[in-house]
Length: 311
Image (cartoon, rainbow, N blue to C red; front, side, top):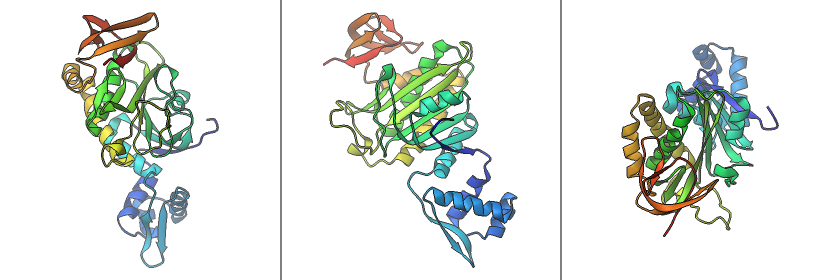
């Protein structure tokens, strides 16, 4: 699929079992083959694949194989975290060293229940086609889901994703799709849809500035490491854990509970705002998020738009 190659790991992959085992203690090739029901040659191919991703596997003639060092980011740790936290929501992880954008990869593949993860995006983007700086050290991933909802419900998924990130990093939600810390944008969320109106494929993209370098001319942006001691893997783990909890509440019809949490963490509420719409702009005082997920400004419901907090 194009010029970007991914490591594709399914939930039931033997490589995950072997990775987990030799992360704990040494195992001989014979032991590993017996545990996963493969030949020793197949186990050796797995070890070789681990090494291709910078994972240092010690091979001792007496004790066997053992992982002694690994990169902070690697496909197998990322997949293990995704499957542990998202459970039945995700069946497969696609891990890219580099991709144009995880959302674009998801749109090309057109299937639900996959998490796309990238170390670097060459064409990361946010709402309205804006560029999202996506160098090494940031967190970039997309989840594809096919919930039993109509298109009008998708903005709620954007908001519950923002809630998941905000709670993970002690941030605030800026309606409709940003997370701020001390008024600095550290996260952007881009939800897109494909397919039928009655049950669309929902593509949920998340970009978080963790310890990546930001362009000097990028105003209003911040990184998590500028505020506290964060790393990509721990943030990824926390966000997915929160997302699973919130998404299940959404599926169970508990939107009102989620809405109250979102309002509590929404920095837009109680501010004078300007909303840029295709037909013009609206200025006023933001008082609420409606049951539909719209921002209420001077009594009017705004369902989408570029929101600016006014001083």
